[in-house]
Length: 196
Image (cartoon, rainbow, N blue to C red):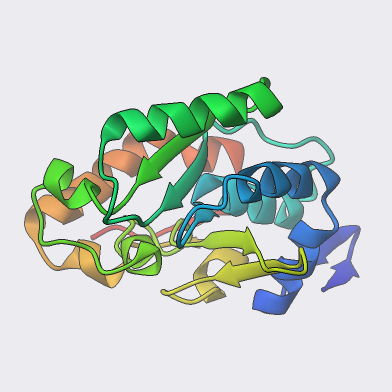
């Protein structure tokens, strides 16, 4: 991680890990999620992507994200009500955070696809490679980053579909619709967007 012209450049996953570890607000959010002791948990998607893109754009103020996605994988308890209870616990700890909690062991039913095998399997099947990221804390409270589609696209400001989202026309259409709806380029103007 180094500065050029007043802007950080991120070279690899370790740079991303250090960036998150140095962010007090992100660490507080991660510590709150960690208290739930969920199996195979991660905070994923925009929580990490926005931090990276904000940094690479030299923003001094954090971009607002619509939610903080906490995912976990528990095949024993797939009741949606359990997710709401967990969400309420997090909201009680940090009421100003827009928490969203999902047990990915049941989401294949919602998405009408074959079952996922783990939370990292789920993350690998997110629409964009720049969104296919997860972060959590290890037993010592250190940040762990997973990037099943690699880290290159997000740190190079490239928005591309994951391999999973190039497999069918339906998924490609979802990817394209997200680009239109999310309007990421209007927030992060250095993005290079790749269409299917």
